[in-house]
Image 1: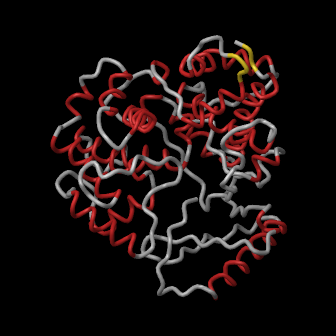
Image 2: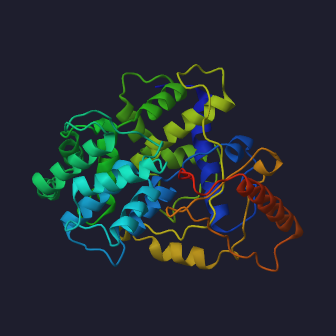
Length: 395
């Protein structure tokens, strides 16, 4: 294989910097969390897929919530329903309207379809923009969400796909089972197989199977001049197997996920993020994507990270979280200089939430940032008609 050295090295450097940001945020350090201006400006996924906000919600609140059923059929329903829309606000809207936990007993494609149609009529966006599933009328409905709910009904209720999944001998078999169904596609089937593998339903080595999504394919093309006949999958596996050697070669202090090395799904995602990063860092590299669309905005509250218990890292995570500094309300330091910046965080009931009070020991600089942000929010609120439809913000 022949690498494009500067871009290939950037892959490992990006992984290291992004993980540095992850731990700096965990420790409640004030921004900037890295000296890299591109990462400070634009939104990038974590080096580890399971650390992203939506994945964390899936693991903690959808799969392993102690108040939810551990029945395998119930778990598969929750995973599929959450991940098809891949949006926390949509999940919470459904449960808020149902008035209970989502279960097999209260799941009905028509009922859920009416609830989501009501949300859309109010101006809510029910799908994430992270990655989009196919939108056809496979099940005869006019609306995308109706067909997706009919798909979930077929998989879980009619076909009882769980019976085939639990009997799978390999991780790839789970992927193949899911890919048989319409509206999903190859990449979405891989994502769903990975999400199911977070649960106790199956327990396969994540490195035993992987495929590259469109973004990863672009990233690989930028990192490699010649792959010597190796497939995208081969290259992802090579990166996974050689990560320690590459970090050492570049003298990088990569902080793993409490001892868990990058898995194939993570290395696949990192190719996608490297492709995004290069659009700004190396614009001369030709690609069908020329700009990074999403700007970075900090999440309003720190995440209490939790991972699949079978990974056996949660005790280490708890120790790290217990040692972090008191929570600060950290605003996006770059956006504070933008007089046109306005950000409204809306809950599903359209009520505005308030942030917690800042501790007395916060520096004058943080107080200044907070005051400027509150002034901007107050100015924004004066122009908002709360009786009008409002769209969910996806942070």
